[in-house]
Length: 463
Image 1 (cartoon, one colour):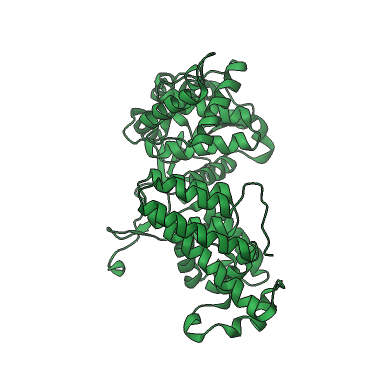
Image 2: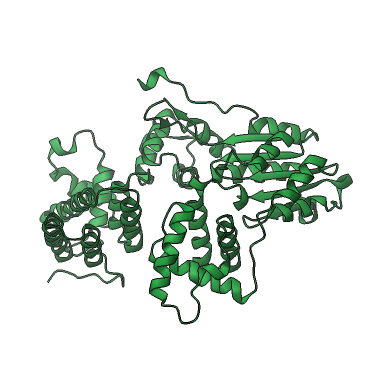
């Protein structure tokens, strides 16, 4: 039983111990934070800011991104600081040369996000660094003149899947080609993944007062350089703990407490339990949701389970919930992405179709329930909905559920026209028949989503 297990405790140094020795002016020469990328970044920045006063950071704190090579890191470490008797801190963030294979996809997705945000240089540097680990240069990532673009993308997709363990979708492959062209036009090159210079620097010892802080995600513990970094200082695991041996569940209590530090708020046991169910082990999402909860709580000091149910949307790693959330938000790219990831991971398209049908049926039910009371008028506030619509729901259906969950489903239904949802049910039935007749299941799913969530954002209203 779950109660017979205890949450796993990190072996070795803790962040608190590292901060204490830094504040005392006796830091180790190297700190390696690894486990969860978001928590590692947060820990690394907190330690770096403890080591270097704010007025000295512009010169004595150097931040290096994921594309930095071991040789670059070694060179920066050898340059003397200008203040505090030579104190200098190098903060290395998510270095590609330490990334484990299971974390490559996350790093690739971050590069895509940076590209979409207009941070082309950062995105291209990160992509080149990841590809360099696989022996691929920028020239390998875009077609030669005269090549068929479609055939090249197929070839590229196979190469990346072979090297990275996952195959980017069509949009991902387009990003790779565009980023590679960008890098070639600017003569950007991936630094050689040669750990020799950094390994030698660690062997000699860093200059007095110099500290290397590495904020990584999941690292490849078998790499000699990882072992060298750990031996040179402190390796600190920063991850959301899990409880149990089989079907281990996340234990968010300690992380929630840490993330709420300084806000004047705390979360009670019920709130933590609901967060575990809704958010799961995604630390970045947890931090974002806690910010919302702090604002929602206002002057209250304690965040409770009711607050979580009011504010937090399920995002735990469940493709069926994720698909439902994307549809309710009318987010076509997110819905297609869920389908792509689930199918790529071996998930069943038939199960996804069933989940999608359940979502659409629920939206129809909530729309019709309100329509029977107020017609086609949209109820704008949860208070009005609770007064007018909620009393019509059979007690057996409500059970111990809170009204807010029903209100959220009604609110989602208002984003669709009645005819649009009914057409969606018809399309789902046709897709079910087609899939059971042996037609391409993934294609049928995408057709339903494209019909239900048109990419131009238009909405068909009932006649």
